[in-house]
Amino acid sequence: MAKEKKLIPEFYEIHAKDIMDKRVSELPLIEKHASIDRVLSILTENDHVWVVESRGSKKLVGIITEHDILDIFSPRKKVSYFGLPNKKSLHYETFEKAGHIMSRNPIRCRPDEKVKDALNKMVVHRIRRIPVVENDEIVGEITLHHLIREFYAFK
Image (cartoon, rainbow, N blue to C red; front, side, top):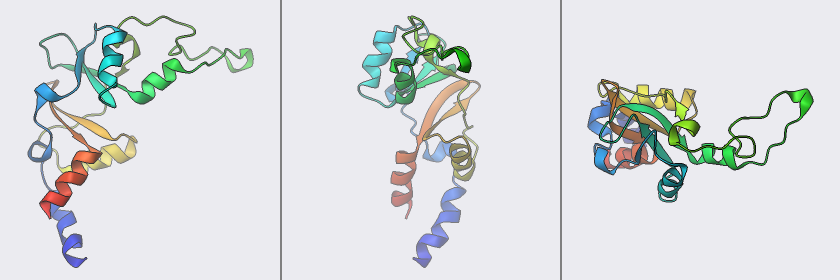
């Protein structure tokens, strides 16, 4: 146990670029003008999809998660004393493109940030994944599952 306690501070000091998943070609990416059908087909294999400006671009503009899809599928009803309904419900608005349902400006980290900084952002913002972005382009990602695997490999 003492060895594990000593390793944690060392693990926290690793840079994001040294621990991130660098296989950008294998990340779930979709352009913001892609159809909802395409988004849903990607989400059958992944729990999230990073939204980029356009095909061939890696400029990160948003994220769509399973939770976002749950929001648009939910059968919410307008209750007059609560105000307007959530516009992300398919019952009130038709969505055609990924850009219509994505969460804009996802929390991100830079390649030179340390694991402890990425983890702090994940905890504060209650997210399980964070894109690693350089010059507005996604260059990798760090997920909670990835961090767990890397920590055990680090020991």
